[in-house]
Image (cartoon, rainbow, N blue to C red; front, side):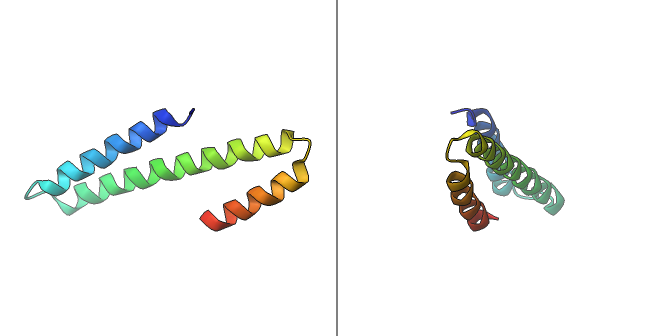
Length: 78
C-alpha cells in the first residue's frame, strides 16, 4: 500500500502523544501542538486518498458511475 509511510508517521506521532500524556507536568500547549500535528497528518492522508481515487475514477471507462460512487463516499467522510 502506498500510504504506509504516511500511516507510520501518524503512528509515530500518536506514540509521541501517548508518551506526553503519561508525563506529569507536560504543558497543555505541548500536548495540543502534538494533537494538531496528528490531525494535520491524518487530514493530509485523507486528501491524498481522495485525490488518488478521483484520478483513478476519471481514468476509468466507467468514469461517470465510479465518480458518483466516490462522491458519495467523500460526502460521508467530510
